[in-house]
Length: 374
Image (cartoon, rainbow, N blue to C red; front, side, top):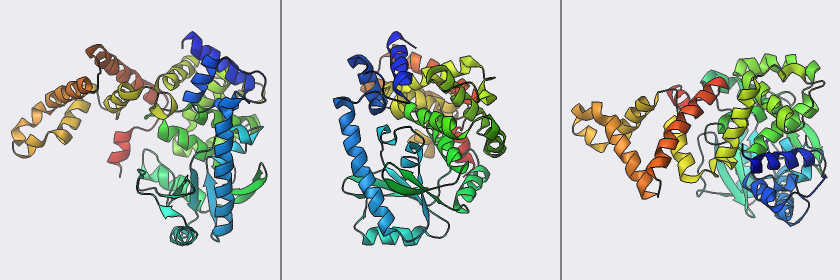
């Protein structure tokens, strides 16, 4: 971490639980890159966040009046509820999961209420995108994303078979999953975005959850579930990171104090390097992410991607052993096209190796494993 990043963390920790002091402009600029400016400021830097939150909350209230089927809100307001001042937590999309057997009915009810299918947004097989009044809604058929289908089905089953509870956030109520399932949802969100570039806001969501819901006396109950999902290491490292950098207390939260602090430092460095969901690093971060996906070594990764991208292999399968070389040249050519220097490409290679080591230490998901199990 550089001096500016340390200054950012100092002001973030200072303002996280209650507004204390307006940070310098350079710190606010870093906060904006991580989408946490409203947690550090009450000035103009935070006004757009507050205005957007009002817009999102209005749509959540309307959705509650439209849907007659059981559903839960995922993340967003279901994370903001743990903050001392929920309004300071920036809201984005509205993630909705109708409970088992109610997806089609929920979809039709939203369409009838004027929500339209948004085909401009990339989705996946877990959800579809709807929008209304400029607010994006992710309507989920399922939620969990893990290394194996068994882990995905386990968490999804816990959510589907749960009884939603109504909680008050600011001046409105939302249905959320019961504890500790809601905490596992937030932790899986970190796991899902870890390889692509994690945002510090997702770490803060988890820290706020730990602060309010996961003292020592509740840890064993949570661990019994997180062990089944392979999330216990990530839970402990991110909580310990909160203690080291975000003023999460150690007294009463000793279950994570045995974590290797160097691992927390490496994770924080990684968050700063990739920025908000990987946007900060731009082309170089995207290249590092591609090179580091999967548990394969660097050259094995090149070989697999070369086999995917080299169209000539269909006509000349005997060239398959040279696919890694084709991909290497392709990578260099694309880098030069986007203005990436050779020195940057070398750094991308080193960063990809470091990223793979970090993912293994965190016992985190690897995209190649996910694809293999589907």
